[in-house]
Length: 261
Image 1 (spheres, helix red, strand yellow):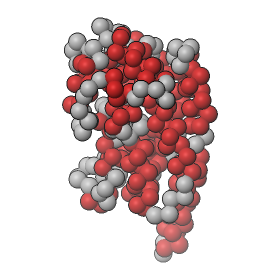
Image 2 (tube, one colour):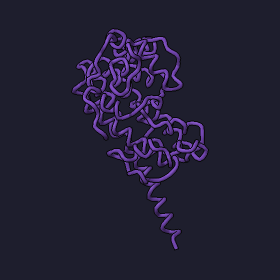
Image 3 (tube, rainbow, N blue to C red):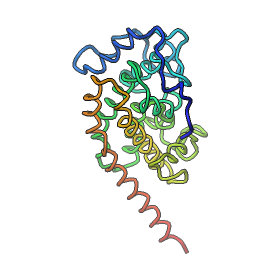
Image 4 (tube, one colour):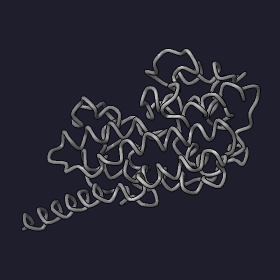
């Protein structure tokens, strides 16, 4: 992962503490007021929504991903829990860095949102994936809870991968390749189709889980217990799907060997 500016990790609050703090508290109290009640903003259908939400949270200059402030982090948190649209958020590594080292209400709102979504999805990683439709559906749904998820994953919810636009399918999308090259990814040349996408998003999942764990020290003390509770569900959840991915890869290699002259 490329080095990121130190300023990114500060997530400096500018005129947005009150609403972002309220958002953080709403995310912390899962049985209380829903996070969506903190700001009145239309549902997110593309990246333009982030600017509107950040401004409603107090950002003077709108959404900023290169050097995010507390309101920008809060906007990402709201989009994850309300709209399940991690794919409209730019640059996953910015938010992995924020999860790891940033401090403040917005940073903690982001941690809580990511941890909540991942904990909700964790049980599904243990489901047997009996056909490509099931794999594609899982990849699509995972993309909703991981900030900066490759848009290819979200497109897989209703369109067969062989019908995706040029450069958007799992075999050609640059963002899929980048995820395959992550620490726990199998490499850029791994597989094809839905299983290639599955391997890629699992690598992103593991980076986010690792960032949540590493970021506990930067989180406020009132937030840490909630994060630790979610991490107990999240960590290790990827093992079942990783086994299925490896089995699929092994079966494919065996088929190639048997068909070779």
